[in-house]
Amino acid sequence: MSKTEANSPTSLSTMLGSGEPFEVNEKSYIIRPIKLKHVDEFMKDGVSIDAQLFNLRNPEARARAEKWLSGYCLDQNGENMTIDKAMEDDWDVVHLKNFFRKLCDLSG
Image (cartoon, rainbow, N blue to C red; front, side, top):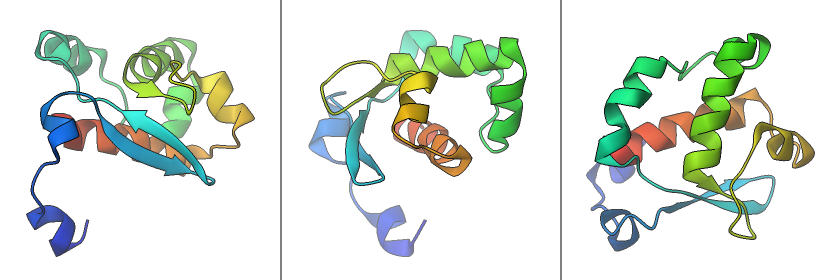
């Protein structure tokens, strides 16, 4: 994150909970901040923020990653994202990592 990003004010859309844009391969998605009532559950789930290989290879970890992706990321049609949709849209593991980082950044 650059100094400009770190010092920039929080956008109105984030403060209102409507989310922030997230681009992958010239497609735009919306990431919404985690609701307060879900913070404990997110922390308990222990989703890997960095190494997405662990989220994708282990069926239980994949289900947890899918839950948070589909709950907090919307595609260009306003529909919940899934790992299968991300694969169809040609996301790579770095894109998935960046989603989780942005989700935490928006929510933190």
